[in-house]
Length: 188
Image (cartoon, rainbow, N blue to C red):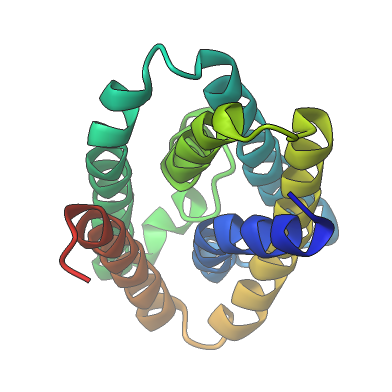
């Protein structure tokens, strides 16, 4: 796999993480670079880790993972999105929960956005000349950069339209999960 193909693949895989980072930035009152980088580290780390795990698993779990990855991503994104929509409807006294970067929240988001990367890792196991270390590093770095930027972009936009932006962010997550599900079911 050439560098151009790897870049396109990395950019494509990171789009889910970018969208979720934008939504996360929407929920934050302030998003200094350190908070944006937390999103980048979680999403970039998982986008690098999942294809490595997929590569290692290879043939053994191929049918099981590819048959349910879209359902896992859909459920996780729908739950997170529904929670964001619910929080957008609650009083401002709950705002301290909106910008949470706690392990549970970030773990669920990172897993949800990297399920497809696991399937790509399985594919890497079947490609003859794949340098897996270079591939996962490249994917992780691209995702880190885009996720960090996404959190900052979302925060700038969302600071003016807090509840509407959080509602839109939750809706985006639900639609993103639905898109993943429908693509894997062959609807489009």
